[in-house]
Image (cartoon, rainbow, N blue to C red; front, side, top):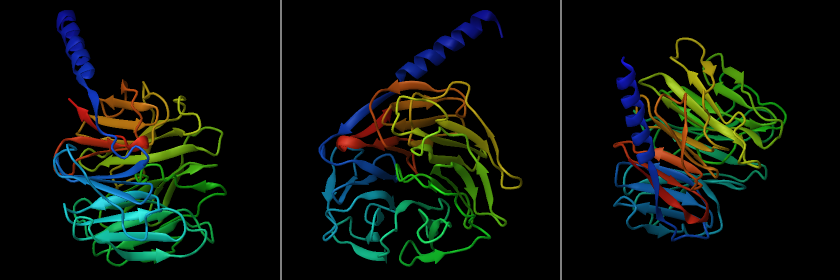
Length: 342
């Protein structure tokens, strides 16, 4: 490549990156912190958060329908999964651990699971993208060192609790999942999931048989470690984000890359230029592009997470690409809901 062509390429890349920006769509619910999002297509998405709040938009965030499931108005909904504009499921953190489902666009809800153990704490859910009947929920250890695992095979109507050291290795003292964005577990096929933990120890876990567990680099505080994960099954690469939510300006150990083809154990690497500050969520857009967000702002990568550019200081807790589309929506504190503009 000639020097001129290379220079033109750099200029074009610079224009492209500078064109990326975040548009805030709504802060109507300014007293609510959103941590759960489920994006169906370029127009339809659901969010959930504090004060028992669930919202849905059918027109790309131009307007929202807000609902508060009756009897759960004071609960903190940290994750949500939607199958269509009528059917969705939400997860409440804290005790009792509750999962609710609606089939009529949020007008009515019913319990599909409840655990009244005083120590229960749910963290995240995920459903397999090629068969959304199958899902998993992860929570912190309750009465032993094993993670709290629930699985469903019928769109969340029934949940089965799993206690198996063969497929789910024990967690260390002070190790748990961060319920920051509902994104620290990812199903990669109909029986295998990957998950990341933080706290005193941060780990990458695969519920293969035998189970695989790998320690991840983290800061020295118990508020640091991995917070969110995404994985491209087509490209066999993934991105882990985190850091220290009590020190959001620090970029120390806030992103780890991994390759995983399910034939051998994953391998890990680190970016050449990390995103800015603490990140709680990441979403892979296509074979090279990804977006990461946190209360420190939003960053974008064009090369599978190797290099990141800070594109907005707007703080968000969670971001997600549309399952059937290419739009990226995000949600966060102070009722903030946004969209990536390209």
